[in-house]
Image (cartoon, protein in one colour):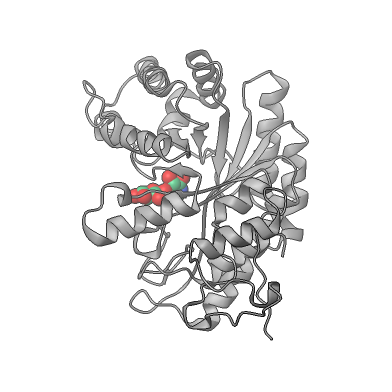
Length: 374
Ligand code: XIL
């Protein structure tokens, strides 16, 4: 007689009580021969043996599992309803993708637009989810009134400080973290040449963190970047930068690793863990902040072989976080493949855990298995 194993949290309820709950809820075939009568399971309607969501297993491992909302939270129709059900069932952390960036929050100098960002924060609060703030200082998505303003350095410094202060005061007490500075390091390991660096000099990074801490004494402040997940010239430079800033008492609490990779070249856990460890040794919390492990697509559809390869890459990524005590969050670059950013969408896509039809992919089950310790 086939046995069905229910993967239930043994710590929370006695397994037989949980079994009754699952069976009573009609969630699918229950353990067939747990009773002396050996009731035959209704395999015609069986659901996957494990219907517990990602957030359940992440919580058991002391981690948040999150996703970029895109426009899903306000998406109309059945698609929106289905996607919001996925978000609230599977994830306990959100980031907004666009709604908290400077060009979105302050499209003109005289006005802030918090509507969409506030709706994400409110959604998270209603559904027991935390929200990451992303991002206060970035060289991209800077509003035109700033980039074309030709402001003298002192004026630009005042604009940046005002932006940081206004936004952080608005969200004070509502966010689980802020990406204060995003992608300040160039891929060659030198400070990226940006509007902020060119006008304000290299101390803009230190200043941004100090202004942020002064505006909100409590929210964890993160530096966030990509291509720094393993030990390389760029991560060496970021490590040196953050080490210097920490030594000067600059209030940096954590580092975000964006984790944007082509799945077939994504790093293994063994390649990532030593790098995570050296940043943790600086006293920094570690978060994976924008994971997209993309594969080649044709009309948005990936091959079964590539989806399996992607699943293996996601498993390695989750294990890298689980093997790092200071790693407390894993965030995905989108809820489903229909709205998930990739750097080159003409060739690559299908980067996240649910496909364009909103079905869980092999990567979803790989993430769940890794979080469950299987
Ligand atoms: C992307 C978002 O996911 C998209 O929704 C948005 O339209 C563009 O930006 N590095 C970053 C993120 O730090 O802010 C970017 O996110 C992806 C690259």
